[in-house]
Every structure is written in structure tokens, then in C-alpha cells.
Length: 153
Image 1 (cartoon, rainbow, N blue to C red):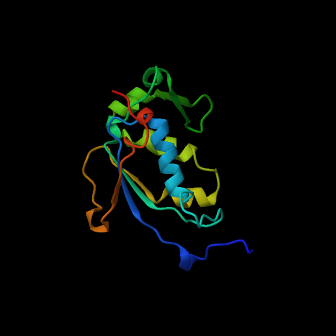
Image 2 (spheres, rainbow, N blue to C red):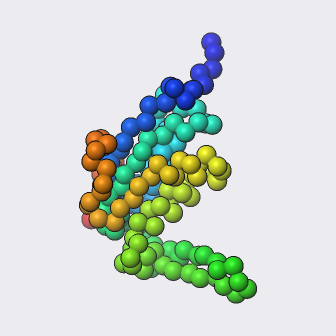
């Protein structure tokens, strides 16, 4: 029995559309990260970009459990001494770019290497319900119906 290793010709990429309205952030991010890496496919090869192209819409309507909306803090540094900046998840979701919360959650569930940075380019996140990828005919993946814990009311 030989170990199967996928070649670039063996890779079949699909387009997946996920509606994030009412879905818990961490559960959505783990499903999206698994789809981006291609771990849902039986032909998964760790060193190849096997994953699908994922479109996430309604990122501004994502749900956070507990007090994460006020207590979860994102940090960044300006590069200057004493230049650490912080912002809460609630302020990002209410701001101009609420899709960054989903992007950061998915990015942190992928390994920190060159391949995962390449796989992150296959993720498109939109704050509203509109997206410009109708021509790709994406398949709808209903994350809400996968598990009852995936949603919050």
C-alpha cells in the first residue's frame, strides 16, 4: 500500500458560500479554516494548497458568546517605543471593517507558515450580504444546521 500524495493536477477547488448571520465566531472560524486547508477532503496532503475558495457574507452579524464583545481585546504595535494599541471586538464589529474579526479568527486557526498565508488569499469576507462572486456559482454551506451550538439567539 502506497501513501497518496496529491499533485497539482489532482487538486479540485470549489467555491463555498457561508452566511455568518447569527453564527458563533469561533465555530465559524474553525469550519472555514478546515475548508481553506482542505482537511475535509479524503485526498488531503499537508504540504499542498488543497482547500476550497470560501466566501463569508454578513460578517457584521456574527455572534460572540459570553462577554467577548467587550472583553476580547485585539492588540497591534506601531513599531515605535510605547506604541502598543488595543481595541475591543465590539468596537471593530461596530466600526468600518467588521470583517477583520472573522479574518483574524480564521488566520489564527491556521498554522503560521507560508502555505497558510497562501491559503488565506482563498478567503473572502464581506460585511454585508452582497458579494461579487456569483459567476463562480458557489455552493451554499449551511453552518447553522450543522450543530445547534453553532448559533446564538
